[in-house]
Image 1 (cartoon, rainbow, N blue to C red):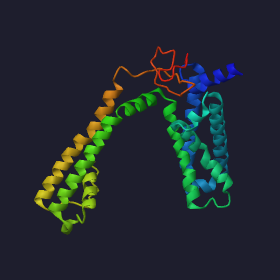
Image 2 (cartoon, rainbow, N blue to C red):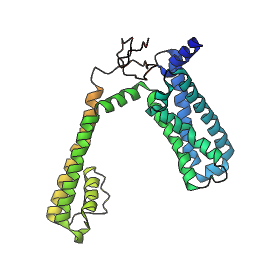
Image 3 (cartoon, rainbow, N blue to C red):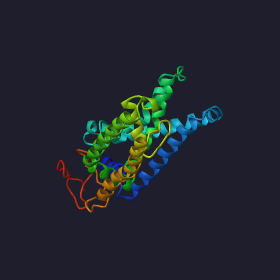
Image 4 (cartoon, one colour):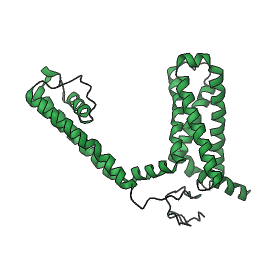
Length: 266
C-alpha cells in the first residue's frame, strides 16, 4: 500500500517523470475543456440546444476533479495542510459549484445559484500547478511582492495627489464634482485607458493631464521590469519535487531533503 501511495504521489505531485508529465498534460486538457464548457453554457442559445450534452460532460469532469481531490488527500502525509493550502482551496472551488447545483435543484434559476456555478471557471487557476513556466512566474511574482507592494502604494499616493490637484484646478463646473471622482479620472488617465467621460477644460488642467498621461507610460513599465528581473535571476529552480510532509516545492535542483522541514524528498 505504501508503494502504491508513493507511486501515486510521484505521478500526481511531481512533474519530472514521464508518468507525471502525462498526468499534468491530461489534467490541463480537462481543465481547459471544463472552462470552455462553462463559457458555452453562459450562451442562452447553446445552453438550451445542448443542455444534455453540457450537463453530462460537466458531471464527468466534476467526477474526475472530485476523484483527483480525494486521491491527493489520501496520499499526502498531512491532509489538513493540503486542504487549507491555496491549491487545495482551488481544487474545492473546482467541484463545489456542481454539487451545489445538485442539492439546490428546483431553484437553479436563482441568480445566486448561477453565480456559484460560474465559480467553476476558477478551475483555470489549477493550470499554474501543471506548467513549469507557471511555477516560475508564480515564484517571480512572490519574490517581487514587497517591491510591487511599495510600487502600488506609491501609485495610490500619486493618483490621490493628481486627483486632488485636478479637483482644485477644474472644479465642479467642468465635471470634477468631488475628489473621489477626480481620483477616478487620475486612475483612468495614468493607466492610459482614457474613457473620456471626464476631461479637463482649462489650460492648466490640460497641462496636468498631459503630464499624467506621460507618467502613465513609465508607471506601466515598472512592475514589468520588477518581475522580469526576478524571472531572469539564476536562482530559480527547475526542480518539481514537492515535500510530502509540508507541501513546500521551492527546492534546489540537487536537493534530497526539504529545506523547510527536513523530510526526505528523493
